[in-house]
Length: 306
Length: 288
Image (cartoon, rainbow over the protein chains, first blue to last red):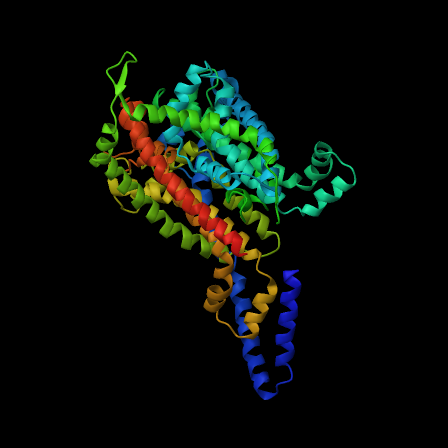
């Protein structure tokens, strides 16, 4: 609607200018020159993004490059690409349980966390977007403070809390701990999407005799499906990238891949090839699903506020 | 949107409340507990009052970590925000370039934080890393392990690499929401490139820039994993930021009282900043 008004306003400006004579023609000529010049400028639009993307990709390329080299080649000769490409480093990870179990552990607690976070966040986000209630603003703010809370503050108390419940080194402990920042994130993102759905839809559904659960599942959920997808993605991502809490709460049975990586660097010396291969494999999940959320990624990182 | 008053909505919020309370309030109570007590071991605690708080507020170590962290946050904001705006302005507006740019630029945001550290640790090494090797070959005496200045540069470049895309994505989201008519009007008025930026693009990006600045400040203020992996807080203490110092204190030295007091001071600062974030955000929402 805003767009329509803008263009009519613009149309008026145009009409005002056309009747004028010589002066307008000169103005038009300079305008045309300006537009041409701008057109030339925009021919190099790709320069800045390309340089930036190269800057982003170089360190990642270096990791990928290393993952296909043997340790002798990494340490012996400096080369920009692997001379004798090998997949031995990846084979180490796929055949050694202490490595690949790390991935399984990570995926288990990340999925658990995503399901819990989005499931509890859905009704809460609906409440925040549709109703006013006692203390709603304070509650919304309190959720935000938890998203902003430094994990370092929580590492030790979490360890003691989950020890008390005997949950140390279980997947559910990490999944619950990550709810600290993922539930607020999911609530904020979903609230952003739900506020975009007009309230008339709810009211019409109630008049049509839908009960709340049926309305929510049959009508409302399909309308915010993309929002749910985005919330899932961001819960998955922030649980996947977090290390401090996950490492504190696990010892062996549920240890995430990221923690196994750090241990290998310090303990077994410098198996750079395997380290690089493990790193590449942790980047892949994000790289695979990012395509599906590309249009919403700003919204997700901005807590649903764009 | 007009929202109706309904206190039953509390039931819908209840699961979230319980879950987050379990992960936030109980641990925070433990921290409060430790911050006012002292122990000689054997789980025997006695009241210490505000001793730990006085100690932390008078300790040079805390204020030095704070100063380092503030300096770090300031530097990365000064670099990342203008750089992010600049790149967003030069992003393609339509065509195949858009999804390609979005996906490639977002990639560093989705890498586990310790892998980000590992990538830069390897990348900067003078023997096997592309960056370190090249700098050495060019004659620079670069060594992030021993030289505080190089360590800082590495950590800052790493953060720019990691998070500038967030600023780019947010600014881009603000830019594409500007209707074409605005640009057409500007062209007719013969507005300069700078005028278009100053009077059309910047006002439209205000809101997203606000989010970007606050998010970047908060996240850099609690940065832990990336510098920890690359420098381990060193050389010496030169890259020991607040979170790294706190973990050292709590888990490394097991100095629970002081760590707890520091946690609370740290958390109160974060609370205050979140409050600023929230009030500014809601004020902005109310305006629109």
